[in-house]
Image (cartoon, rainbow, N blue to C red; front, side, top):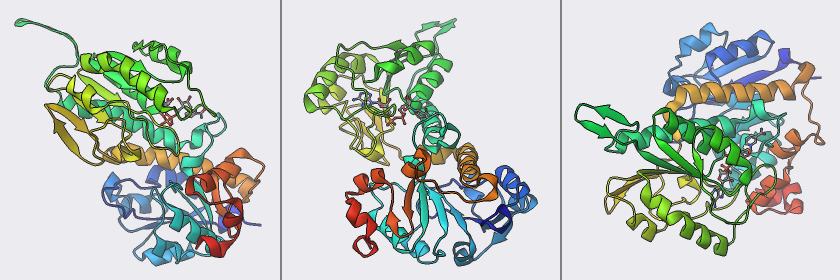
Amino acid sequence: MTTFHQVKIGVLSETQQGERRVALVPDVAVKLVKIGFQVIVETGAGVGAEFTDDAYRKAGVAIEADRRVVLGTADVVLSVQPPRLEDVAQLQAGALTISFLQPATQVVIIGALAARGVTSFSLDLLPRSSRAQSMDALSSQSSLAGYKAVLMAANRLGKFFPMLMTAAGTIPPARVLVLGAGVAGLQAIATARRLGAVVEAYDVRSAVQEEVKSLGARFLELKLEIQEGEGGYAREQSEDFLNRQREGLAEHVAANDVVITTASIPGRRAPLLITASMLKGMRRGSVIVDLAAESGGNCAATLPGRVVEVDGVWVDGTTNIPSTMALHASQLYARNVTNLLQFLFSNGELKLDFADEIIRDCCVTHAGQITSERARQMMGVSAAQGAIRSEVR
Ligand code: NAD
């Protein structure tokens, strides 16, 4: 039996360019230490998020300069981005990893994790159920992105967001349109409202109408069929639907100063909501922040990781926005991961009950196999291939 007292948690320093987050922060590490886990953190892992090695030491954590020691001795390895291929080779067979594994793009890494006999959990596959809510790192990070997107737009817009009555006359409030009212979109609406903008929003799922209205925004009625999918997500829309949607949206896109786009379909290319001709209809100085930049973009002019100007309209395709708020992003991520760990190690013993939807959906590799059906679908791997190590190497 594995108990807390025998379990060593290792925390990696993130290596992906621009990634400032860390998977565990000192005030969350202290709780894990208190319940009996041993924690080891790679030197400097928290620096990008403003957590010094000393802060970890004070939390009862050991600091280790050699990444290979963290990888090779930890029973549980935590990171935000997936471990690298050379990292996987250092892991103990039977070790457990938790990260955003991103199965659609990390086919080779996942194959290597399976081949090494590592049990890997991917937080981006967590079911969107109330039981899993406290572990939902996708939501916590989306919330940060929605908030920051509005600040980025406000920063670039040459206008006030709130209405102002000044001695020099009245300034009307900025107008903000939010496309996609999921976790990020709702946080964007709330933030734009707090800054005093007039906000309207649209989503293909009618379930969000009341939430949009309760935040003080107007829900756009486009007279289109509802596109409700499974598990609270939208389903992929046809090109005909998207054409009619774009027609309905064009005048609203043109009328707003800021458009925040957040529309996405898990595992698919993001739907195109703003075409080049719609962009031409916008006033000079308007700003689009495209939170779907990484998955193809909601705007035709979006370039991932760049801000471009098209006929006077700014299109911001900044990627990994949560990393720009690394302190809170890491704190929330660490809490999500810790809640998952406490769920996995209930009563001090690691339990993997594959009948439980959290384990079934979120566990990508175990005992040499790619166990998650959703991961296999995203990777384009069949169940038989997922079960045979050599074929996925
Ligand atoms: P997401 O990031 O996959 O998508 C963002 C939004 O884009 C969604 O609201 C989707 O409906 C919308 N969208 C897709 N295509 C569109 C289009 N063509 N036009 C306009 N909008 C479009 O989703 P998400 O924000 O991660 O989550 C979606 C929903 O999942 C939440 O709003 C909630 O209902 C549910 N959820 C539940 C839990 C939970 O119960 N624990 C946690 C998180 C989310």
